Each structure stands twice: as structure tokens, then as C-alpha cells.
Image (cartoon, rainbow, N blue to C red; front, side):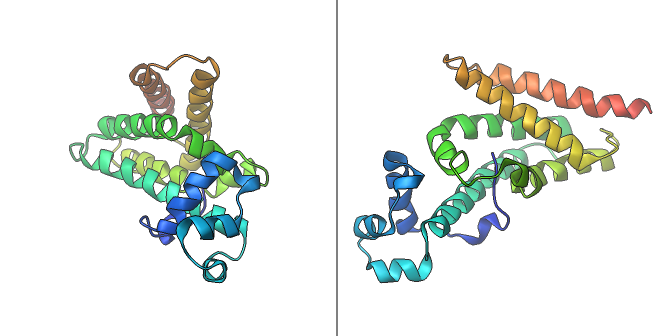
Length: 198
């Protein structure tokens, strides 16, 4: 998943965005029109353009809302873990990320896999990666994990996680989410424990 900075800037309960999201899922990003969104939301087109001057501005707001909700769910999952239990926090993050991706796959793909979305930029400016870096650095500070470059470690892992979920989707069978999350957590923990030997 790629994202934008300042993901919490868009209100979660915006009815205009609710209507835009529904239209996006049925029509696709390239056919999402501001006039159509205004009609569906019951607002004047000029009022909608005051808030979202272009389709890209509207899509950007939808992306920001998606990411804010996704990160909020991950944060709440980690907060339910016992303080200092870094392995449990990692499991909660990974399971939440796998579930969140698969549960909202159609919307994720409509927002992040369309034309004009740049994957390289997303790996540098991604609040989900920032959140996982914070988790890794917490474990490093507690001397549970080790990594010479936490952000690079997380970028590698994030790409591996994304590819693993994409592979499960491509295979066309409902993935065993729990098993997938276990494999990913094992991969991550082995990589950050390996560095502790040096």
C-alpha cells in the first residue's frame, strides 16, 4: 500500500467522500467525475469544486482517508498488546495489515494502482512505513531487535509483505491469513535478530 503524508488531515465522516468512494468502486478513477459526485452527494458542483478543485484532489482526499483509517486500525491492534511485548505488537501489525489489505482490496487497488500513481515515491512517503519504522525502533531501543538501517529494513519488509499478499490474490484461492501473517512475522524477526550477531 502506498500513501500520502498527513493522512489524518481528511475527516473520516465526510458524506461527499462516501459518495465519491462508492462511485470510484463502480466507475473507476478515470471515469470519476466531480459533477457526478456532486449530484450523488446532493451538493452544488461549485461547492464541491471549492473543496476539491480537481478529480486528483478528490482522489487524494480518498487516499488520505483510506490510509488514516488503516493506520488507526493498526495502532488500536498494537495498543491491545501488553506493553513491552514487541513480538505481539509485530504480530498485531502484520495481521492487521494483511486483513486490512484483503478486506478492502477493491478500494485499495482503485486508489493506489491507477494511472499517475508512482510506486518509487510511495516507498519514501508512506505513513504505513513510518508506523512500522516506529515499531522497529521501539524494539531496537528495548534491545529485542537489531538493524543497521531501520527504514531500509522496513521498506524491504513492507515490499515483501505486499508481494506475499499479492501472490495469494493472484493464486485465486482464499488465503490462509493467519498462516500468511505467521510466515511474514517469522521472516521479519529472523532478519532483525540476525543483525544482533554483529
